[in-house]
Image 1 (spheres, one colour):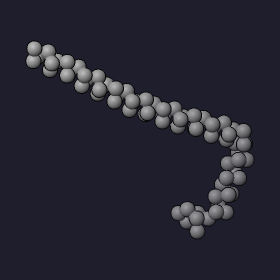
Image 2 (tube, one colour):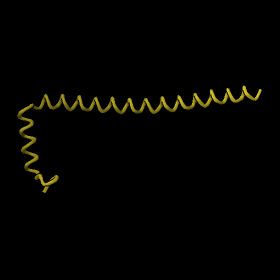
Image 3 (cartoon, helix red, strand yellow):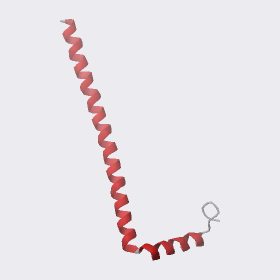
Length: 72
């Protein structure tokens, strides 16, 4: 018994059919494109988190200046 009732032999047969249909070069290109898309997504999420942190610290600095000016 494999994944959800699919045996390992069934998975190997499906893999062989996919390789015959698309070829190894095409599958390698698809894998590379998928990896690049995932890397790009992770980078954009990381950049957005850094940008959000910088924006919050800038707003705190601005609020601090406004509060100091109100005291004067």
